[in-house]
Length: 340
Image (cartoon, rainbow, N blue to C red):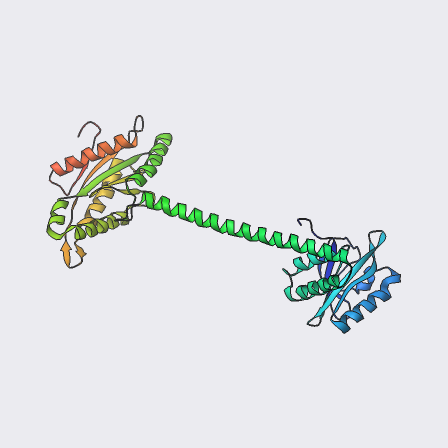
């Protein structure tokens, strides 16, 4: 079923002038658009071609007319079949009647209506003739049915695979995303962060980390309730994200504590970003019917490119965060790598 059927097919006008060549798997050297189809036959068969066209036009279909055509340097007998449809003739010739059906199945993809009519005419012709042809037809129909079932199964499998891939992407996204803020959760932050640290170490490019949390967040929860507190965290994360670049990695580290990685950024550059973020967060928040003013304390550390890793970098940034809180909160502190 994978080999193309051995035959030729074309569209003619009502007088047998070729308008379109649809298929030629035989190699008829004289087959060309604009010529009379009788030119592909040997001289002794050209009257038969004229009778074939006349019968086709009169009855709407003509099946299995044996015509001697010129193939390369020899003459070969090829049965012709055709139908008349909307002022045109669809004609095919093949060495085998089963190939004729296979050709019709291919032609249905190109010109459905006449190809379907032609297939029905050929099948009807087979059913009214010898049992051998009927047996061939039965076998072909079974193979066609099985082939169509296989195609449908392959399509279903491709669809299921696409659905599975989409589901896996969704699962991975959910596994690495904090549902409250929509940012990376701790696992997602570490997965992406390890890659950034490895790249910075390999190419000796600067990378800085921030750790920050909400000043006196427990007071917000105690005063307004956890629902307002959760919305405040979501708004805070959105504001922080708005001042970051696409390459920066923001994650909820736990509770009201967040972490950020800034690739290609020194601690001095991180201070500039941190100040923008601190100012963005300190603007009043309207949550439900409450107006809140939230501040954050921020600790910054820069990756040691000789002997650094993500865990140590975050420990230094966390140490700077506690120094910022000890300094009065709502401020930025940079860790110098030596404990303060």
